[in-house]
Image (cartoon, rainbow, N blue to C red; front, side):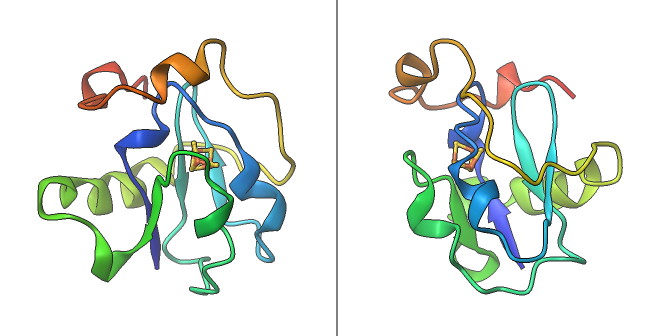
Length: 106
Ligand code: F3S
């Protein structure tokens, strides 16, 4: 599967959603995740993300391993998003920040 990393939090640009052939993205208040049971590992979403928030599971950095379980957990709670939407307010400001997990709204 592919995994959405912390960089997406408070940005949620959604460019990734438009290219997904299987609608595997689930939308939360200020983040989105990939459903690991739906993702077919096509990787077309990776270059679409302006903040490089999507990686293959085997490429998740050591300090973001917790994001693998978080994607799997939140996908059960959140609805499918299949079309691009406006990014969150101040997404460009948030794009410069790191250590954003503390701002995640579930
Ligand atoms: Fe998030 Fe990047 Fe998609 S910021 S919504 S993973 S385009």
